[in-house]
Length: 167
Image (cartoon, rainbow, N blue to C red; front, side, top):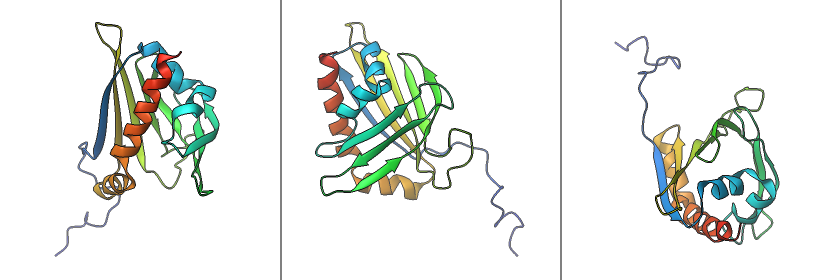
């Protein structure tokens, strides 16, 4: 006999599940410069997509509930609008955003992940940069891996590293 909770979408185990992909780098710049590169739409547009991809129409409102939107363009005319909100912003230290909600806290209908960017100062004035993509389930994690998470996010981190040196 089936348990009555087997098909109940509200029945959860109350535990956090780790469907995370993580990338770490040491950037030769202060956390303040890294934070600025993420929160200034003009600067963000210069590095936030792995070349030859690019982003346009960036809207960055670094506060809980603030928008984090952009359009990603591919080399063959692909166009992917991305809409999300910030969940947590700690100036010069952490940004957490998600595509799960709209700015008025309505469910987006197609959540993919929560992105967490940590910027930890090092003793020598650099930044330990940790980017974590937290997925809702194992299928979403595998999809992101197949899309090239490590290569794409790695290239973007390298582009960020080069750009922040000049800020």
